[in-house]
Amino acid sequence: MAVTKERRSEIIAKFQKKSEDTGSPEVQIALLTERMKELHSHMESHKKDHSSRRGLLKMVSQRASLLKYVKAKDPSRYVKIIGELGLRK
Image 1 (spheres, one colour):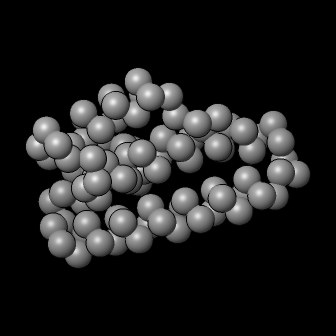
Image 2 (cartoon, helix red, strand yellow):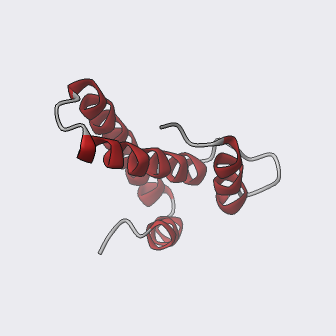
C-alpha cells in the first residue's frame, strides 16, 4: 500500500527544484497525491476501513494547506503543479 522506493524517487526527481531538494511544497504535494491515489483504491475495496478513511482525509487536508501556501507565495507555481498533477478540472 505504500509508495515504492523507485516510484518515490521518480516523483522527487520530477518535481524537485535542485538536486538535493526533497522537501519543497511541490515535492510534498506530489508525494501526498501519489499516496492518496493508492489509498483511494484501497478504500474502494475496503469500504468499512474507517482508520484508513481518517488518514486519507488528513492527507487531503494537508495537501490543501500546501496548495494554499504555494498559491499565496507564487501563483504561477500553483498553476504549474495543478496542471502537472491534474488536480483541478
